[in-house]
Structure formats: structure tokens, C-alpha cells
Image (tube, rainbow, N blue to C red; front, side, top):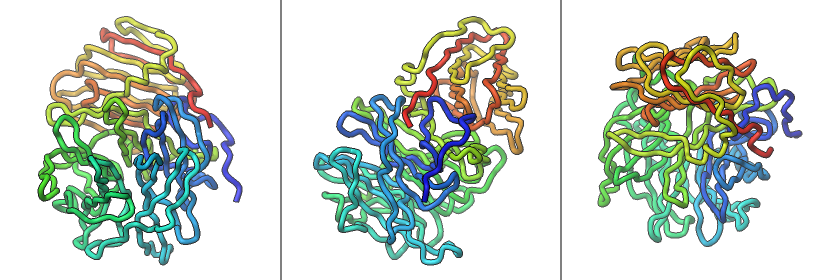
Length: 450
């Protein structure tokens, strides 16, 4: 089969990571090894549609400027796909832990899943472990058993896995190992309390601690839309709580969506060498239109976001490395009138009032953010175009990143975020609320090497 080629660059993003062509979805294996950040992603190089999953691969010195590397994992005859997973450094090698997806009857969606290893000394060329699979589906489980996230504490490796129990509710299983090859089940770390509020399957689980607070990040499937909540086909969010170190069960609160936009799913985090917890996500969703499919590619990843816990919530901030993209400060003034943006732009608004905070428009597509009482409303002129979030108190700061076919909005230093794919026909015009303080930066273009 011949790999896809991009036939039109009209929607290719300037500073978001994409594949050189073909399809991508979940970020995988986000890690740091021998001086580079590594990012892998679910990848199908032969079409701009989902297909048997490979692991695409890129590396970066700063999480911003990425260099595409050869495909890291290919499915073989026994594998119908190398599904999502993670990476960990052990014995001076980079180890990938991924789900093998095996169809019994593809037409009827009958399959089984198991967990596998691959390793590399140079961080570029990977070899599958001869003893795969290292973990098979447990007996108290349905066919859904995927997306391993592994981390190390002292001399022990821990793995959290997305799972559906025999009761057909989502859950996160915890395993431990001393060598990555032999795993023992420790506990059911957490499970859905019911179907409509917490889902039938928890994809892409991730578990970490920030400032003494334990965080379970995951993407539950099957939540029922309720008013402003759970408006996308599948959600991504988190449970905050405290892990009982004896029972290894999480005492936790309720599920909170982490991003309120249309195009955000399947998060993964990494711990940076300086101790920050940084998250990326697939900047699409399974029900996103993905107009770039016509051009030989589909999908991208969000900008990296640092996670902090504040006021009992998870906040997300653009990593400080994003400052390296700033080329020129174009505007710094109390806003008035309209501003033509460049195709790669960052702008911020401070000291806003009620009403429409800003509008972006290219004549065909529009996106507005409006403050009404304690609610923030995003509206775009597409079908099912509205999303909203509760914001108590004033909106004191908005930070917005505009790319060729995306917008990411950070409210009050990450209290709320909206992530959107918008297929601008040309760089949009910004109308900002009169009297709010506006800064606009032109950002670097064509940042990544494909």
C-alpha cells in the first residue's frame, strides 16, 4: 500500500503537531528520553480515515518544535492494530506499553485486547518484545481492556488500564510489576457509579499526583447529555481524590469535564524533568467533521498544557515554552474596532465585562465567547454550535491561540478551556469587547518538521 500524501495545505496547522499525512487520533507514549520529549500517536498512514493502528512518532527539545520520526510500531498478522498506550524509561531503554487489538469478527465488532511491550535504545527504532503479550484480559471483564498508562515509583512500575467490568460499567484497573514483563493486579482503582453519569467504558486513563491531590484523568464512553453537560459524543474529564495506599482504591468526588469545547478527547500526560505535569489531547472528537480528510490527512494534537490543582479543580495553562513562538507584539491597547489577525496568532483580553467578550470571523465562519451571569457561552455558526461553562465571578483574563484550523481558549488562567477545530477560509478578524485590555502576538509559522 502507498502512504497518503497531503494534496492541499489549506487547513494544515502551523504550530500544532500533525502527522505528515494520513489519519491520527490519540496521543500515546508522551515521555522524556535522552534529552528529547517523545510523542507518539495513533496513526494510519494509508488513508485519511481510521484504519489498523500504527504508532506515529515525533520528538522535540521543547514540546513545541517537533521533528517527525519513522513510524515506531506497525501491526503484524497477529495484531489488527497497535492501540493506545504509554512509554516509560527503564534499563536505559525507552519502553512502549500498548494494547494489541485482535478481531475475531470485525463486521460484528467482536474482538479481544491484550497488553504488549516494545523497546528502543536510541528512541527511534523499536523492537517488539518476544514474550508478548505481557497481560491478557481478566476473567471479570468484557472485551474492553485497553490504553495502559505506566509510571514508576521507587523500584515498582504501576499500570492503570481502561476496562469494562462484567457489570458493563467503566473502571480503571491498577497493576504492578518490577520488570514491566510480569504484572500482578493490585486493585480496581475506581469504577463508574452508574452508566448515565460515568459511562460504560473508561478510555485513556491516567493517574498522577499534584500537590498531594490524586488525579484520575480519563475519557468515559456512554455518558448521557444533560443540559450543558456532556454535549459531545464522548467526554474527557477527571476525578479528584485521595488514594488509600493500603487498599489502592481512590476515594474521590464526581466526574468533571476538563474541556468544554467540541474537539477534545483522549488525553495523556507526562512529567517534565523540572517536575511539571503536562497534558496533550487529540484535538478532534469521533463526531468532528474533519474537513481536512479531503486533503489527505486528518487529526492533530492540542498545544501542551501544564496541569495544576486549584480550588478543588484541575486548571490547565499553556506551557511556558509556548512563549518561544511569539514573533512580534502587534497590538497592546484598550481594544477598539476590528483587528486582522495573522494565521498563527495569540491574543489576550483582560478586565472584561458582561456581554460578548470577543468574536472571530473570516466572513464564512464565526466563533464568539459571551459572558452571561455566571456562564460563559461559546457559539460557532455550525450545527450544534453552542457550548458553555460555569464561571463564578468575573472573567479577568482570556488567552486565545488561533491556528490555521483551530482555536484554543483559556479562561482565568485555565479555570475553563474550550478547544475547537474551525476551518478558516482565511485568517480571521478579531472584534474584542470595547475597553478591555488587548494584546496580540504574531506567532511562528510552519513550526514542525514533517
